[in-house]
Length: 251
Image (cartoon, rainbow, N blue to C red; front, side, top):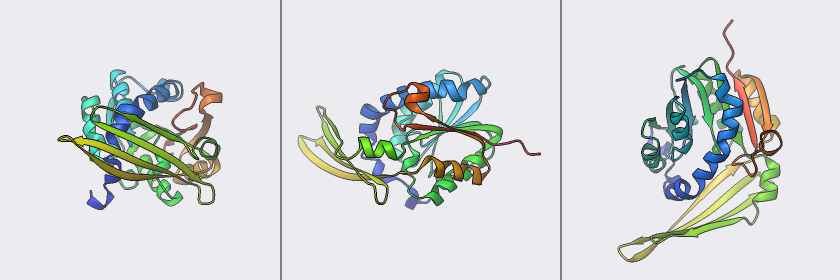
């Protein structure tokens, strides 16, 4: 892949995500996976974990006996994924541009697709997923919708202090352009000296109707949307709407 599509801005965030965020994302993703997707899959099915991050969801799917391939655009994220889910196959690539043959029974993506910043690029992601799925294959992913950004983002703060590093994240949301911003500051202890690293991650807010429309335009059928808390019993999920759809059989 071209170096221009590497998500290097995510590399400094990888340790924070692996240690502080991903376990919670994984814990909240498992009930929806077990309810909405896994009952439809045969033992040993092939699953693509798109934007797999540090691999905790991949790890749990491997434990359940599935064959799992993870894709992520951050090499540092994948370095953790290869440790956390050593039985998986991992590919460094961009969700917007990856090309894989139709070999997967299902594709999942947990807490990641709001980082795709335009509907055109989101359509590209969906086309790539469609191409990678076998006929009758399933696609399950979650996203934050506008009410979550409006209620839980502006002024949100989080952080932690460890022996050798400390971090703080400030969240903000602009309702005019529907963009959420994560301003991240990290201090690393290197040979007795603290060094600072700043990075910014952006998220785009889409409506449920927009996402459904793009899925259907790509060719997905049986599109269903579930509210994480109301329908699935998952509170404060990493993406409050779960979308499930299928690639149809060719007539």
